[in-house]
Image (cartoon, rainbow, N blue to C red):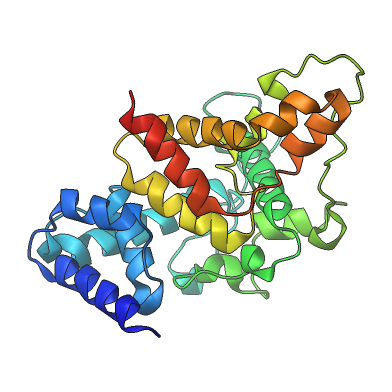
Length: 275
C-alpha cells in the first residue's frame, strides 16, 4: 500500500471520527473514490444514501432499528402466512375459513403474499442476471435472518421457490445481440434503458462499477449526474459512432469499449461544470 493511499485512508477516518459528519467534505472526498479498507466504503455509502444520519451517536440505535425493520419485512412479505416456528417466537396461525390461499379479497394476507412475491421473484431474477458468474450475488449477508437461511425450516421461502424454477444462475446468459434492424435509427431505448436502470453495472467490471458508484452516490443530484455519465460515454466514442453503421454502433453501445471509468467520470464532471 502506497503512502498516498494510506494518507487518503487517514483523511476519510478523520472525517468519519467527528461526532457530526461534515457531509460536504465527505461528498468531496468520496467523489474521487472511497478506499475499501476497514469498511470505509460501506460506511460512506450508508451516510451518502441517508441510511445513517450525520450524528454518530445515533448510529447504533438506527442500525438496530433498520435491521429489525428488515426482519419484519421478511416475516410479512416472504414467509408464507399460516406457518411459523414456535421456537422462534412466532405463533402458528392456521388457514381459516375467512382467509385462505384462494381468497381473492384485497385485504387477504394470502392475496397480498402472492402479489408481493411476484415482485420479489423478479428482483431475485434481476440480481442473478446482474453478474451471474459471481457467487457474491447469492451469498448471505452479514446480518442474515435465520427464518430464511435455516435449511430445515418449514417456511416456503423466496429462495426455495426460485430454486424450483428453471432460472439458474449458471445458465443465465447476457443478451448482447442487440437490434438487427438495418436502419441507422438508433434510439436511446436500445441501450440507455439498461445503462440507467442498472446504474451501468453491466457495462463495466464490478470494481469499476463500484468506483463509478462512489461518484454517483457522492453527488447530491446523483441521478442527474448519471445522465451526464451516460452522455460522457457517448461523447468518448463519438467518432466511432459517426463512422459505424447501425449494426456496428449497436455493438459498441451494448458492449461499451472504454474501460477507464475515471476518464468517463472526468468527462461527466466537465459537462456538469459547464452547465
